[in-house]
Amino acid sequence: MVNSDIVTRRQAFSARELCVTAVMTALVFLATFVPRIPIPLGYAHLGDAVIFLLALLLGRREALTAACLGSALSDVMGGFFPWVVPTLFIKFWMAEIVWHLAGRTHAGLARTAAAFLLSSLWMAAAYTAFGALLYASVAAGLASAPGLLMEGLVNTAAALLVLPALRRLRRA
Image (cartoon, rainbow, N blue to C red; front, side, top):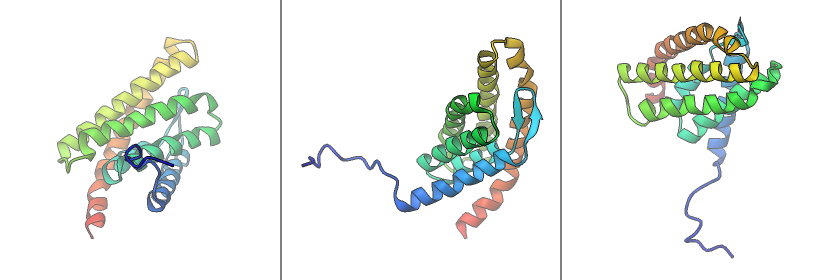
């Protein structure tokens, strides 16, 4: 017998949350996997733009779960196995940064752009550090930094361009 005073927090995803999370995981995966642009130690993609938008438009759990699983699945399917665990960690914090800075409120353009850029800086710094660790070379890690920074800028711009249309659709 379970004491109802102890079990007060909802822990399981509802059927709706699970379906939304699954579809959004697939969207993150596709945006990450399909437009793969080679850069040192990996590839650039548009998946981060999707992660930014999910952090603004979905619930926290759905956004964080889709960000982590969709990105990690892209690493698995692309053969980047050593990057799966770092990707889970990095994408979790990317979505968390955006959600905390702009997702909980109806943030204006400047705050939203700042959240995207800060999240992108985190991503570039974290992948650079993990690259240095995985390849036992600071130079190897640093080689990917310019591409990662450019990827962050492109994803920020893409998300900012699409966001107004998604917000209008959401209100309709």
